Length: 288
Length: 270
Image (cartoon, rainbow over the protein chains, first blue to last red):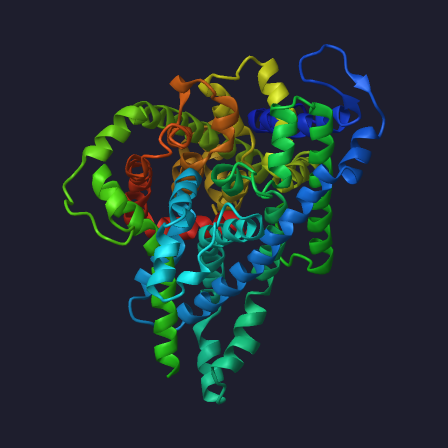
């Protein structure tokens, strides 16, 4: 080892210090807290073994919130399908292409709190959605969109689709456009129709980004927080896992229990990512 | 036939995106009496009625919100660029033991969703005495950003090493190479990071909500959120404030469209 070998660490120091302080230490502490009963203030923590984990998996209040993720998970399939459809449509020449692209993408850039208010306004009784339904002669179908536990989660999942479809759409469009144009020309000469082009050129070309989107969809639907928290505060059966963890930690001061919830969530997300890496190995890990 | 379907679907989707926003814009220009007597789809009578905007701006202390957001934005972005480019310089231009481990640490950290660790992160920020100071948000925006480092590394790899070597032969030291050669050439990557990270910070709700509890520290997200309780019956004021928050996003999007698309793609696929 030469004397110089400490030099790169000097450049790395700020980034590593931040990374360790605000990612690795919290993860480590979280695991430690999860085996204790602690209110976040008391200097003494009571070790409780696996109790917190047992509670997360057996107490209905804690595991039920996992099921709420399913609404968002199913919604994210709709999101991917819609995004894929419009990405394919707009990858062929279309009038006002950039305008449509901009409109479809725009919601993703909006402030989450603003989105929350826009949709509270839309869903309120006698609000935009009810008015539009009446206008279309579907007046009988109006509901308490956020008040009725049977539909509240659907309304919130719909809001989430509205907000995030633009992101998937732009990612898919980018991937499709990176396929060289000559391939389409060659396919045209060979008499391939649009469906063939999609099936044999576009689909394989964007496989990686689609698999990435599914992983993001799964971890995203487990970590839903902003939209339900802002719009219903978790009322009417819309409490998600993160809202529950937030309340457990910051309102009921059960840090140990909340940490156990967070550890479970983290473990699930890491496991899913690992599976995805195994199933669809990354072709371009070139960072070294 | 297919073409009509294609345009019909595009127009339908555009309506689904725009109608919810346009009706809020309508509401923002209505008087209270007008709001309660007209339907949401009816345009306002007077497009120059800015009363609600004035009320919202004052009641929400939006000036303070924008100021706080701007301060946090400028400090965090400057910090992200410096910390990120320095780390990327070490990883891209030096060879050292444990490099793979360091890369692995960054890679795994990118997979940890920020919302899950706040329970424990809060205790750390609290023990540093940063809760209820702007620094809590700043260090968290700096410390949880792995994507930027990746964008920087990727870009730095495309800068020819012969430039470094030429400068080193001319007697420049390593830091001068970073400062005078690498950093100026990194401008496109820096622009990308500033844009996507800037948008993310402007829109962030959870971190300011958790750490900046005092009203003096409201950023625009939390300032808007405070309208929820007391103004529940005054939708026209909430609507105006929502539009105040959305307007800068519209302007930035119209000006920087191309950069935003590229930045989003670069950020998400790393």
